[in-house]
Structures are given as C-alpha cells and as structure tokens.
Amino acid sequence: MKVTKTTIVPAMLVILAITSGGWLLQRDVGMDANVYFQTRLLEEVVSRIDRYFVDEVDVDDLYQAALRGVVDQLGDRNSQFLEASDWEDVRIRTQGEYGGVGLEVDNRDGHLTIVAPIPGTPGARAGLRPGDRIVEVDGDPVEGWLIDRAVDLLRGEPGTTVTMGIRRPGMERVMSFDVTREVIHFPSVPFARMLGGGVGYVPLRIFNGTTTAEVRSAIDSLVAKGMTSLVLDLRNNRGGLLTEGVGLADLFLDEGVDIVEIRGRNTAPEIHRARDGQEYTDLPIVMLIGHGSASAAEIVAGALQDQDRALLVGATTFGKGSVQSLFQLSGGNVLKLTTARWYTPSGRSIQKEPADQLARAESGVVTLPGDAAERPSLADKPEFRSAGGRLLHGGGGIVPDMWVLQDTLTTDEYAAVRKIFEAGSGFFVALQNWAVHYLQAHPGLERGFRITDADLASFHAALLERGAEVSFDDLVRARRYVEFHLGAEIALQAWEDQGRFDRTAAGDLQLGRAIELLQAADDRLELFELAGNPLASGRAGGAGSTGESASRR
Image: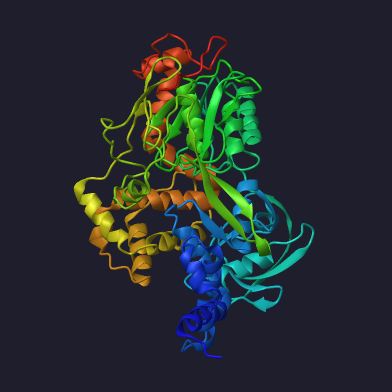
C-alpha cells in the first residue's frame, strides 16, 4: 500500500509532539501560561548544567537561586524566599524567644566575635564580653566557620550545656566557659526612664510577641514613680508583627475606634478597631518618629495621629505601608509575600515607592545622631483630616506634626565624614573593636568620661590597621561625629542601652523638644496648641468618650 505525503506529515507531527514532551502542542496554548511547561523547562536546564557544564556545580544551589529569582522578579523588597535557617532568625525576631545562651555574634576580621551579650542571659551572667572571640564550641575549633553554623550550635534546648573556648583581647590563654542554655527573651523595651518634670520615656525597638505587654508594664512602672506624660520613642523601630502594632495602639484609644484597614487584591477589606478601651485616658503623649520608623511602628504612629491621641515629633518615617504573609513550604522553607497594603483611619496610604526608599538610603545625608536632615516638600502629598480636623498628609511615610531636625554637620565636617564612610563597614568594626580595648584600659571608667586627643589618635591608628585611607586631619575635622559614636559605643558596652541613652540624650534635639512640650502642657489639647497644631474641633478624637473616627477622603 502506498503511503501518501499528506498522511506522512501529520504522523510525523504526532511523533514529534510525543517525543518532545508535547512541546508543540503546549506552545499553541500559550507558553507563558503553561505552568507545567515552565516547570519542566527549568528541570531540563538544571539537568543539562549538572551533566555538561565545564565545572562541577551544586544542583541544590541552582534551584535555590532560581526560587529567589522568581521572588526577586516581583520587584518587592519585602517579599522573600526564606530557607529554613533564615526563617528561624525571622521567627526569633518576631516571637522574641528562643533556646540559647543570649549572645549576639558576628564575623570580625575572620574571627567569630561576640558583639554583645543580651543582658540577663546565661552568656552575660557567665562573664562573656563584647570583643571576646569564640575559638571552640564543645571542643571543636570554629576557625573558618560561617556564623550560621556557630549560631546553630549555640542555640538549643533549654537546660542543656555548651562549652565555649574564648580568646579575650589582651590575654594569651584560651578561657573555657560552660554555659547552660535557657529560654532567651529578646525584649521590645530595653529600659524605661523618668526624665524629670513628670515626663516618662519608653524606647521601643521592635514589635514582637510581647511588645504590648512590655509597653504596658513599662508605663505602669513609670506611673507608679509619678509619671504624668509620656515620650514613646519609635525612631529606630523597623516594625514587626501587625497584631502587636494593633495591640499597642489599642492601649491608647477608645473602644470601637479605627486603628488600621488592610486591603488585599482578592480579599475583602479588614478593619482593625480598638477593642479593650484605652488604659491611659489622661496621659499626654509625644511620639518620636524618624526615617528608622517602619511598618508596625508606622501603623501605631498613623493611628494615634489620625485620632489626635499623640503628637508626633521628629522627621518623616520610612514609608512601608504593606503587609506580608508567611507561607510554609516544603522542607521547612518559608515564602514571605506582600499580600496587602494598609491604610490609616483617615484613609491614608503611607507606602513609599521602592525607588524613593532607595534614593533616601543612598542620599548620603549625615546628621550627628543619625536621623533624617532634610524636610521634603509637602506640595505633592495628598491631604487628609484627623478626627479633630487637623491637616494631615499621605503618601511616602508618616509626616510628623512638628518637625524637629537633629544637629546636622557643617559642609567641612560632612566632607570629612564622607571620606570616613569610604572605608565602608570598617569604620564601625574598628569603632566596636577600639571600644573593647578602651574599656580594658579604663577599668574604673565613669559615665562622664571624655574623648581626648590621645583617644582620637588611638582610634585613627585602629582605622589605619584596617586599611582605611583616612588622615588624622580628616578625623579632626569630623571630630564631633567621631566623638559622638565613640562615646556612644563605649557607653553601650560599659552600661548597655541605658548607658548609651544617658550619654547621648543631652544632644538629642528631638527628645529635648518633646520634653519641653510635655512639661509645659497641662493636658493633651494644650499639647497640640503649644505645638502650633491645635484641634479644629477643640477635642481629641479617639482619646475620650466624645471622640469620632477620622473621616476618609
């Protein structure tokens, strides 16, 4: 039987479609939409690389890179593919607890170095110090180890013991420390302090699982000491758990008052409202904010500003108005994905575009305490009204009610600091290492210590040892900046967070202005009036029984 050409060609197409995995047929239905095709294509590429690439490769690394590439393609800095080990670090930061010895460690000049023991933890009680180098863990040398490997061994079940070999600067022999692991709590509130005139101060550095309870406890302790007004410092708070942001705002707002609205692509809007009724009705509050305030910190700031409950002082916040959800994946991996945006009670979105966030981070603006120095234009920002009728602005972070900029550097100082920054992270590594040696040389150091010319020369030598191309004249021209950081680091290592606060508070212009306002104001309404931002309606919405929810525009 003669086979015609017209019957051969279709048969060949069928054979080709089968042997090629259905490529031709799948191409016809749209290659981009065919998930099966794309998955198989990835497998084929990795397989060919594994088999034929000129150098040996790790296939697992290729797949990990591909997974990260998929998430990176979203162009969202807040969406991440997290390996199981990375997820554990995120979990610890958000929940605030883990089993371990309580040490912050880093790789310094190729050595696993203790940056700081967390106060009150087994590592701190054992006498471990900043600058100590870990050379052994349970008898195994750690030279060349990655930080993650060492951290995994230091963490563990509470009640178990780890033995560390420590080489301390200035000592020849290796010291041995047996440290029993405990449940380590990473506090949201490092300390609370009375500042005089009835003003209390509570710094908040993260929103984890215990934040609301810690702030309530801190406020109650200060009230017992006579506090009549509060400074709540969120300037270096990068955020954390949404639920804790809502819970903290709930402490200061009446029941039923709006706190935040969550809007996703495929879900109905979700409004979080105060449920318990505020616990501190008559407490005037100034909240300090700045570029380091982000995420949950901005939710609290936005809610209390919209409801006229707190006066915001400082500079514009970071501008992270998105919400991330966590999805458990195979192998203990986790996908952190942006799934919604949030809006303040007045309807403001404070989300700043990624390009604007990057531009701010790379602007090179330097101030003495390290906060934003420029005041951006409000001309192009959308306008809203608070519950009490005050003018508010949306778009690109929370704008403070009162701008107070920190002490900026002169042109000559700024040029010198730029030269120092060219050393990259070397400046801060040298700073921390130098502070360790400084404390060893000054065992009876008192809190009022001064940085001398000899100290500056000694630090300059430390910079040169790290290869920094910085002249001593540059260091002298940048002296105010350098002295500020040297003093702050020494105080931190000697007396922890409270010591650093005591060292730097006098030069903190934003904190100083907050204290002045609170000491002069008899109540919340007068606080807003003194700040030049009075309530149009004459009452503080959300702060009392007559409060109204802010209207959306």
